[in-house]
Image 1 (cartoon, rainbow, N blue to C red):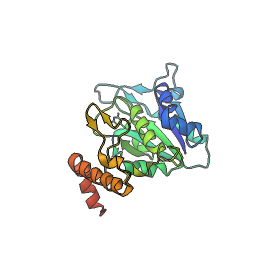
Image 2 (spheres, rainbow, N blue to C red):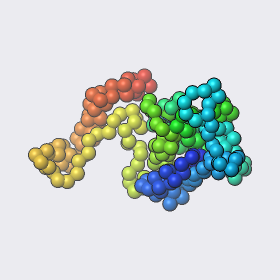
Image 3 (cartoon, rainbow, N blue to C red):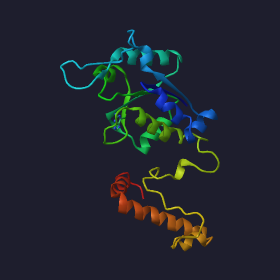
Image 4 (tube, rainbow, N blue to C red):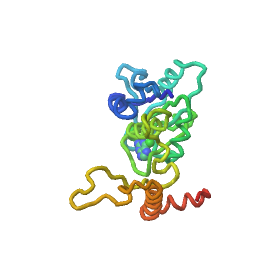
Length: 234
Ligand code: 6GU
């Protein structure tokens, strides 16, 4: 998968994208990720990318020209391929595991990071982009949201998690939270590992884990339980 990120702060994204699972996926060629700075496409000598809003009001608004120019430049480098454009905005569709799964099927994503105060509405209406929000709270810019989205997508790409681990039994993949995990020591400050996990009985362990997942989901996220019922799952 190819991912282009259009942003005012590539230097904030690059070290995170080079670390951990995402960094390893890039190194092994599973994903290729490039950041492009809107500011390189500013048209004046001050490299202006934002301006005061028409009609007045606080803050600055990201301008059309540098965004359209950056997008067209990035896409012109790959003539003939179709990109899927994603605009990161608190007004977008909420990111869920399902949305991440859908986007992980695409060959080429172009992510556009919004700006503190907002962007010119014609960026939204003039670019055919899927608009995505990572949750109901306000971030200063779309950059941290883009990192969240990239992490959620890249770890779903075949081979990204490596070894025997897989995203298949993650929380949310089937609408349930994860079961609790333990490692050595068997007892820590008076807290013991549940006996069943030490029993060697794989059938009982599997049953216990399933029970734990259902119990936890009911207790902590009854909304997820309802979603499962609505989708007709067992
Ligand atoms: Cl994508 N951007 C901003 N600025 N704030 C957000 C968001 C995105 N998603 C949730 N809050």
